Image (cartoon, rainbow, N blue to C red; front, side, top):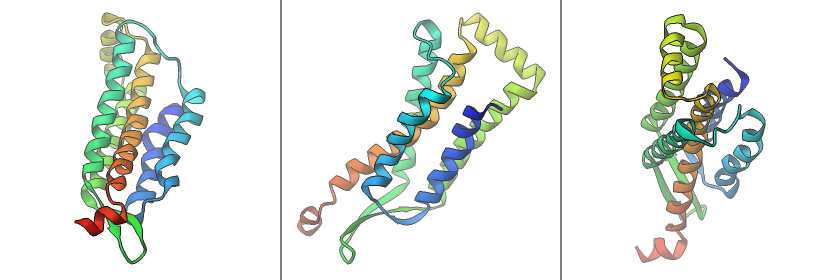
Amino acid sequence: MSLSLWIGALLIPVAVLLVDAGRRKLTLMRIARPFLITAVIVPFVMPGFDLQGRGLLLEVVGIVVGALLGLAASALMKVEYDGGSRMVMTVAGAPYVLIWGAVSAARTLFSYEAEESVSFQRSLGEFLVSNHISPAALADAIMFLGFAMLIAQRGSLFLRARRLTPAAVSAA
């Protein structure tokens, strides 16, 4: 697999799980880090953004599916205010880990099959040709899915945490 696909398929989910699993403080850096990483990494590993036709549609679908998966992952996390430490905390357990693991495994398996399985390559190639989609658009869609998942998840945590100000907690 190419370096960009390995980064998206394995490195990012592992890093996310190391930062999120269990009970953790929700800091500004924890929210901002995925946005910064995406801004730095995408220009270097993106094979080529397809700006037309079905290639663009596939890339957009990758972003939308990733965002929906990110919202689902976020829904599996608790966001709570710890009065003792006066910090917003997140709690991520097995269901959260499973969704990231399942998405990562599916993306890795797809990428592996696309490179190693002749019959899968043939079917995938026929699909791409018949739908006028470039291989670069497919690679972008896979990569965008991972980044969109992470960004949507972090954005959701940010919005949920904003509702947990000390005044809002004491009023409840």
